[in-house]
Image 1 (cartoon, rainbow, N blue to C red):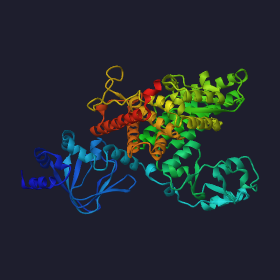
Image 2: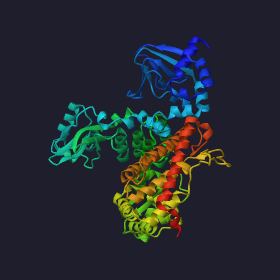
Image 3: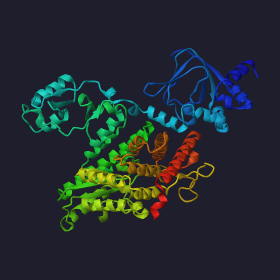
Image 4: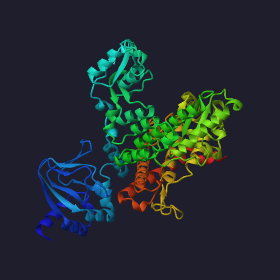
Amino acid sequence: MESEQLEILDFLQKYAPFTFLTPETLTDIAKTIDVKYVKRDTPILEYGQKVTEWYVVRSGAIEIYLRDGTLYNRMTEGGHFGESGLLTRGKNRYPATAIEDSLLYTIPEDVFLSAYENHEEFAESIELESRSRLRQVVSKATQANELMSTHVKKLLNKEAVCTAPDTPIHAVAAHMSEQGVSSVLIRDDSGIIGIVTDRDIRNRAVAVCMDLTQPVSEIMTTDIVSVQHDRMAIEAMLTMLHHNVHHLPVLRRDEPVGVIALSDILRYESRNSLFVVSRIYHQETVEQLEELKTEVQATFSTMVNQESSSYMIGSAMAAIGRAYKQRLLELAHEKLGPAPIPYCFLALGSMARQEQLIVTDQDNALILDDSFDPARHDEYFKALATFVCDGLDKAGYPYCTGGVMATNDQWRQPLKVWREYFTQWIEKPSPKSLLDSNIFFDLEGVYGQAEFAHNLQTLISQKARGNNRFLASMARNALQRTPPIGFFKNFVVEADGRHSRTINLKRRGTAPLTDLIRVHALAIGSRAHNSFERLNDIEQAKILAHGRTQDIRDALEFISSIRARNQAEQLAQEQVPSNSIVPDDLSDFDRKSLRDAFLILSNAQKYLRFRYQPNRSAH
């Protein structure tokens, strides 16, 4: 070796992960290294840049940033960077800049990947520098998305503008123009009692030739939805999605500190799901709703490509699905007339949990008022259910193959019958009855009398908590789907059929995870719908060993993100999206992380079996 290569070899031997390589491999690497000098304040890697080499800092200092410019890490002598882009065979996600005059060793991509794939300890050292491999990749993905890492208060650029309820409408409009705002909060001595937007003034006052000297209270919206200033921007966006509002008051405790407008969120997402929801509400026919399918798919793909978390994607897609249901019900009323008695239309399963992706079917039901008389009312509600379910199928939500739809007479019943259903399922459980009814334990009212759904949720919470026989039966069902990991911790793939050599990430991954999370949530009386929110309740209840809840959260996030990414790639290739992946098509890094996630699921199922003793449910 030349003297310069010997000097490089001597340097590398001092630092991990090179200490885990054989002398022969290390010598071969030293021979391939190129030396680069970069001046202070020089960018080395830009966001989105193709990564073709691995960087080791010989001298100087390098700073690594998140996409929003936040400092993520600082590298000095012996530090390395660029491995994230190489391991995912993609583009750089973490910009790097020299903050001092620096000397870098660069190692070609093929040389780095060869060392990574053939030397386990070398690979482990790289992956485990920041806690576990899975925790690292999930936390980086979360930090990389600005909506997940930005607080609501950072979105505010003006203080809240308030006025009294007796202020004339024309004076409010002038004040809004003077302050350069699109909304005003209405408050009296009791606090905030309403909000008025520029759209309200236009539609509720000017368009109908209203006397503009009338008090603003005549046109204000009193059903106020708000968010606390210390919450994350993602929560603000999801709140706006859930309630279809374009202005969201921000409170510090009970005091308003500002208002977030739709435009404040849009700069974080180029093809925003808020736009799609708004478009859904403005369609006049089922055929027009059907035409939005491509926009929904494009929104999903954009969120995946922007590295949004599965929590964010699932919540946004569920909000879109909920908007479809609500608009179809409005169109149904236009066709059929008003409902003869109060009712609540339920979303079930992944939509109720706010964990929906682009591959989904429809699961729904109807709760009718206890005054329901089949002879007088059922013809209307059957027609209503048929209109909505047919419309959902056209809009891209296929009929449920198991018949869990409001068109099924069994799932179109008065509240008292639904209470009997759940009482029977919980107090006299059997694995068979709960297998058929499992999906009903994830329910949300999306239209009509929401208190009907709340009534059932209260019943479930009260009767399920501490009911050992019921929980044992639920646990037994939750253990029927196991992760695809063999005895030697290798993947077990489908052997034949259309999806041979694949793994169904829903059936063997996210579904058993959500099942076991649901059992724990029912055991502690959690009222949360979403699996991640249920995990927060489970963590507070301390029914799992320290760190286990975070492990389950990471496993669910990672498997869901791989599932979403696979569906987005299939859409991009004009294929029918599915839940099945070919493990060999994943990068080595993703395969190892996916194996880690499945092992966490396996261990979580072992604990479920220990805690709830599901075998006793068969007696």
